[in-house]
Image 1 (tube, one colour):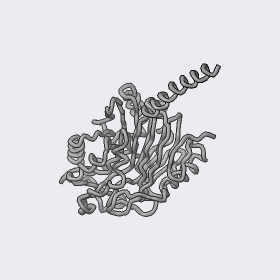
Image 2 (cartoon, rainbow, N blue to C red; image 1 turned 120 degrees about the horizontal axis):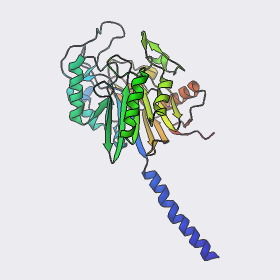
Image 3 (cartoon, one colour; image 1 turned 90 degrees about the vertical axis):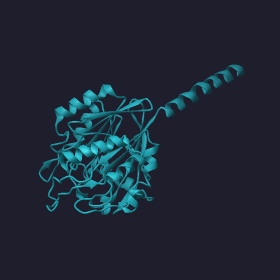
Image 4 (tube, rainbow, N blue to C red; image 1 turned 90 degrees about the horizontal axis):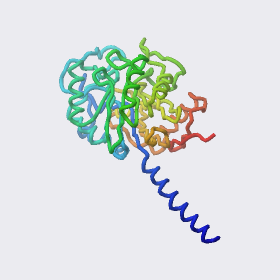
Length: 349
C-alpha cells in the first residue's frame, strides 16, 4: 500500500512540475507607454541635456526585458521641412525631433511606434516620409496611416500584429467603424497576438475621467473609446491601449483582454504641460498567454519634469492614481485588482 502511495506521489510530482514551468515560460510580456517627443527644434530649439542620452535611463530596462515594446511617436523626426500649423494660434503645437535622436528609441528597446496621431502631419508629407525612412533605418515598425494600416512583427517565433487608429483626417480613424472592422478582421489571421493602439479623447487634466459615451474636443469628434475598445476585442484583439489626452486614464479587463484607455505623456521633454497629473508617465507591462489572455501585469510609476524624461516614482502614486480613476469610471467593475505598487491581477470577487 505504501509503495503504491509513493509511486503515485512521485508520478504526480513528475508530471505537475513541468506543466507549471511550461505555462510560465510560454507567457509573453508586452511593455507599453504613451506619448514620446524627445525634444523639438521648432519653433525654437528646446532639447534635453547631453543630446538626450539620459531621457530613457530610468525606464529602458523595462522595454528591453519585454518580448514587445510599443509607444506613440508624438511628432516627426526630420531636419528642415515646412510646418503645416500656425503655432502662434492657441492650442496649435508642432513638434520636430532631431534625426540624431532616432537611435535613442532603438537603444531604449522600442519595437513599434504609433504614427496615427495629430502630430504626424506637423511637417507635411516631407516630415512624414522622412520619419518613416528613419524608423525603417532603426528597425522600428509603425502603423496608423492609410499607407501603413497594420504591421506584423515576428520575434522569437511569435507574430505580433499591430494596428493603430487616430482622430485626424490623415489617420486611420477610430470613429470609422467600417474601417476598424475591416483592418482588425484582416489582421487577425496574420498574427498570434493582435494589439490595437489608439490616439483619442479630449486633452488635459480635467479630462482624466473616461466618459461613458462619445467625447469631443475643440469641435472634433474624439470617439467613444469604451465602445471602440470593446469592438476591437470582439473582433479578435488581444490587447488595446491608448494615449492622446496627455493624462492617464482608467484600465479595464474585458473578456479576458486588457484595455488601457490612456497612458498619458511618457517622454515629452519640452512644449507639453507637465504640471501635476500631466507629468505622470507610466509604463504598463502586461503578461499574457500565447492565445492573448491576460495573466498579470504592473503599472510602473514614473513622473516627468521639463527636460528630463520619465524618472522613477518611488511612491507609486501614478499607479494609485490610475487605480482611483478605474474605480471611479467603472464603479469598481473593471475586472482587476491594482495594488499600491501597481501590480495588476484579476479580480477574484
